[in-house]
Image (cartoon, rainbow, N blue to C red; front, side, top):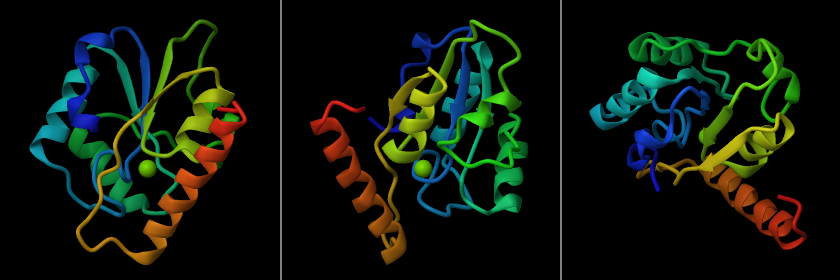
Length: 152
Ligand SMILES: [Mg+2]
């Protein structure tokens, strides 16, 4: 299911970390659809929602944060590094959910911080670059292997 197809009623009182590229828009997206923005707003109504991206696009990330009115998680680490969670978790028992389109970044990050992972369907651009396509192909392949050995 795509991000916009999530059921907001299933999320309440949680800390939700949302990926950007492939999740809120296509890889490198500078804009979001109204539906995407509406879904973020609905989630933010009953949960603490944060944006987190591995993409070195600080201006885009800041613009999304401002547009959605939710904080961006600034960390010197990249997903799936567990230390990112230090920026966020102020105590035990926080119910954390990671929403993203990639297993080897979002999924593994969730696993490492004991969070729930929700894999959303990847938003792709019509003219997706070779690099992005290759990254997705590698992600899907690694997932298949990890899944086969019951590691994820
Ligand atoms: Mg992504």
